[in-house]
Image 1 (cartoon, helix red, strand yellow):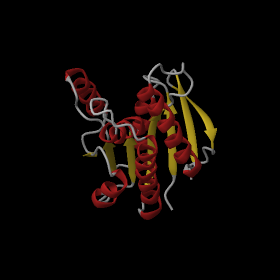
Image 2: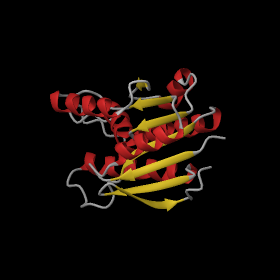
Image 3: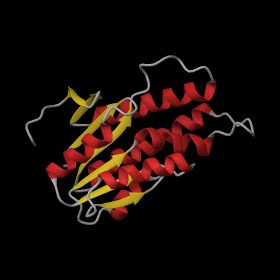
Image 4: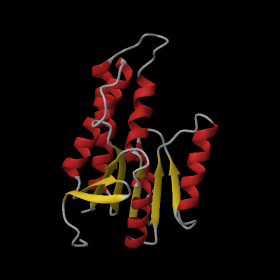
Length: 189
């Protein structure tokens, strides 16, 4: 069965850098699953920075939803899969379900869509022969957001992180570039 490592932390805490370092130590054949969508020039530049930080030999799968299914289709001979990041994946699901302009607000349906997405990823963990490193933001330690959509996003990401942490062998919290072990051990299994 695959080993699952969940790396959580705030923005610019070193999550992605640490995930890349960890994968380099574990295997040469890595599938990097990028969930970001290019929405503007600044985001395009961020994505390019992340690409430059990864070995050129790694394969990249850019996918915004149905991540678990796509990993199963594209795994190939990868021994390690990095999913970066759950915060963007939840945002992708939310943005497809929630429309401010149309005043379509279906919190229960949106929550179910996020649960289905995360359950699909968890099912993938069980069905493929690879180790997983999953990156996500921790957004529950800040102030309560002022608007409904932001509060919904915070709640959905918190739930997604909890679901993943339950299935993870290890959970690490990144603080100022330093990994703090929350769950599991570092016995190298």
